[in-house]
Length: 287
Image 1: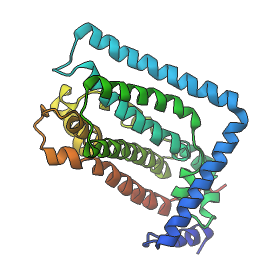
Image 2 (image 1 turned 120 degrees about the vertical axis):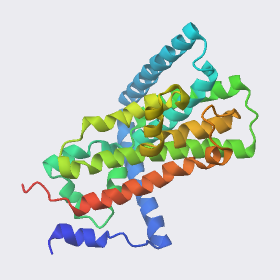
Image 3 (image 1 turned 30 degrees about the vertical axis):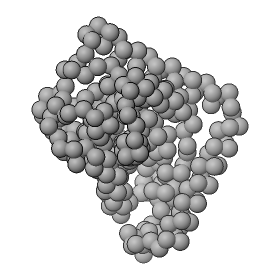
Image 4 (image 1 turned 90 degrees about the vertical axis):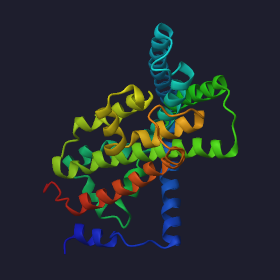
């Protein structure tokens, strides 16, 4: 049995005891702490990166504002309502993007053979990649999206209650899990394609553009794709409709609106399972 298979046998998908899980969480926190300290060595670079992301996303929202300033509404949706979709989507995506850097650059590791070193360590490869880098500059996008989210909530005069606050938090977490899972799947494809396929960006980075608008403005085929194939509707549209307290033009039941954020969390679990299959079929570069 070669080293790669030996290491994988240690990482077989058996149920982990609680102590092992807590140990993995502590290790992940240490990974993030190391990344944080490293980036704080160049604070000017961090600030410039964060500010540039903040300004770039502000320009994107200004385009959204110009659209509604010209037309007033889109299929009955006003700017503050769409701004809530925008805020939730971009807060979630910034969280996923900022913590999934290892999966985002995974194609280069496969080409260079660097991934072999990860297999020789007695830790989950997914955990090692997840803790590779915490992208602090994504705070710019996160801050801008949070400001829009708070502005939309204040403008709409939403009557916040504990269940509605919990649903909002679950929606952000579920959306972040879905985006994270998509980045994991994009990395997993590199085991067979070596290169990261740009078409996957249509459902990651392009998916954020889709989720910024209510689902009912799209065609039926488009709606079905982003509900049953890439379930962005389940982690964004349906729960945001419930947060707004608005009747869904698509007629979704209330129980679906409140329970749909779980789909994002389930999607992440499935993505990590697929990742294990990819690791099992990894054949290295031979160099």
